[in-house]
Image (cartoon, rainbow, N blue to C red; front, side, top):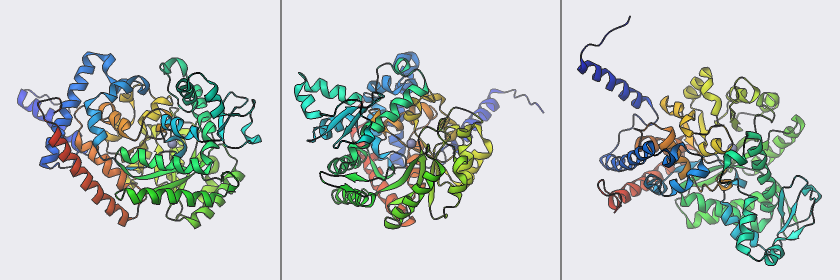
Amino acid sequence: MKTTITDNLSWNKIRNSVIQTEEFLSTGGNLRLSTKEVFVDRILMKYKNDELNEGFNNLEKLAASMHFFKAKQLIDNSEVFKLLKLMPKGGLLHGHNAAMVSSEWIIKNLTYYPGLLKCTNKDGVVIFSFRKSDSHNCNTNYELVANERNRSNNPEFYDRILEKSINLYVPRPEVEYPNIKVVWDKFQNIFLTVNDFIKFLPVFKAYHYRLLEEMYQDGIFYIEMRHTFSQGYDHKNSLSAIEMTLELLNVVKDFKRTHPDFIDLRAIYQVKRRITIEELSQQISQFLTLRSYFPEFIIGIDLVGQEDTGNSLYYYYKLLQQLSPTNRFFFHAGETNWYGVAADYNILDAILLNTTRIGHGYALVKHPVLWNSVKRYGIAIEVSLISNQILHLVEDLRNHPAAFYISENIPIVITNDDPGFWNAKGLSYDFYYCLMAVGSNRAGLKLLKQLIINSLKYSAMTSNDKNIAIKIFHKRWNNFLDHIIKNYNLYNSKN
Ligand SMILES: [Zn+2]
């Protein structure tokens, strides 16, 4: 029956009640903020509104709507971003080890390591390594990077060119990456460029220590990272996957010694989704062997690579189904903008396989049965906003389906996927887009706080570790609030 509201008072009452109910039902909507939090929220909202209003009137300044490569400078200067950088982020639950450290640091440090060789393969992809191997498929001779650099008139310029081989940044992404294939090809080539380079033990150790540093500096104090477990090498020998894992654990131990409030790094065994069923079977055996050595460190398994062109979970499901439930899955699924195809149904098979979380879940929005299940069973979606934009799923992140997940309070966590490949250190840039583009204009500290709590709640930590993590979070959160209250006020842009 259609009703007619005749007086303004009732109209506004109903209107406000709908707005408030929707806010209450959204992610973080039912949190109660303390007096301190309310104060900080007001500061945050002032900056947020100022920035969005300015962007509304000058769209060329609306970083929230822009491609990250064009928005980065604006974001770096944003007061909201500066505040987000200070905020503790909790756990990082989706990143790939080979793609997490900033390319600038790699070039300035690791490529200066003596003995680094470089060649170009038949597809024009630069390969870095400390050894010669047929597996590199070199089409050119190997050159010592140090010699090339010395011969160049301008080592700074040489390094900038070198960095291009491990970074996707281009000033005009719409021209240089006209479609998903072009950008995915370049993206996957970067993994090829660094693959053998970071298996060299001294580099492997320095690289992973830096990874922990960069994440920690951005307020992350727990990490679950997709990791390629493989053999490595040093000057003399090849090293087994077990030896390399022991080295990695030593790096983490060293880091924790000097960073006592960093809880831990855990790894998800990643396998490429292009392999045959027999190859997956072998990989699973290796995963089980390694897991028997490192049951705490290796928390589960995942299939990675472009879903549109790779094998579906349905293709492998009979094999995956045989794994005992003590082996958790963390499947990439639904990282596609196709609908009703194999990649799209990966989400369905991931849920049927009892996945612990879903990587990306971009396509989930189109499947009401599935998003209801995800909500009911608490399967968190690992949302990687900048990754989805750069890898061509969405241009303007205000159109990202995570806006719907937030409005429905579908469990999500904010993750960074491959930040080193696109100049996004840590998680702050992804949080920026989440707050400014994906969340409602009215969403502030409640949304942020819930997302951080989610990153601990939906992690694979034991309940004991989770309690420790929550304590660390509260302490760091309080320090963050105090810092903002002390250094910012509502009336000046910044003290
Ligand atoms: Zn990923």
